[in-house]
Image 1: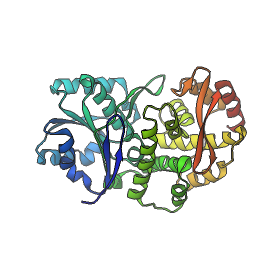
Image 2 (image 1 turned 180 degrees about the horizontal axis):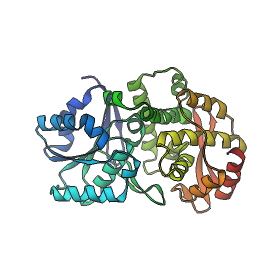
Image 3 (image 1 turned 180 degrees about the vertical axis):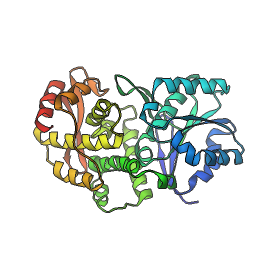
Length: 348
């Protein structure tokens, strides 16, 4: 069984394993980390229909006692009600502090599973098993966990590192085209913020999935090791997200995360030259269009501005935005919220 390994040194050190077909070795991967324990697999209805039986067979064959909890697929499931329901499920199954959670799904499952693990009995171990490209390159790595509340996306959460990330890239073969494309937005983001060579390779389709996932994970690893708790350079990973989260909120999450990030990156690229930075909006837009993204905003500058006021990156009267200096080099800019509102009027 061949796979790549990316090691993360954070408040909890762990490995990220990347390869095709490696889910079959899950029991062997987790035993040195978790020992003999009980496992609760959190997944969603889409993943369960495809692979729910498979993962339970692998775990039972490896000698583990495992149970499963399934939530409806979709962003709406990343909510307080499901958080409490899963915590009650763990309690009902009499899970102890020596047991562990496995988050088997996309970003919603990963965020909900990680937050649940951080809260149950004040913290139990958990493993991330991302099944989407977006989760593999972004949300499963770095320890950010959260749920959404009506006031905004990811406003309730914690920093809580997994014990292992196991990314079986073969699971992405069954993703709907639009879900896979969502992950491509995050991949393009990594190229834009820190790696022009990666960005340039993305013009050739299809790209080498395992290699690209490993490169993106390596970039995020390097950033997280410098700034685990998001007080500085980790903010670069939010390129496109400040505006993207506003679009998600305004659409009541009808616009997917990847689509919203694509729109948000274009807005940020248009704002950049107004702040004395370079203009790469046309180049970035052309690449996003090649991947099939709708990069039109769909909302007024005033609507975006009002949604930004509850963004977690706001500090008092300023908000942090990531703007490109050039392809492969972005910077964090602190802008007064009123000034950002004026800039949005000029680009939307």
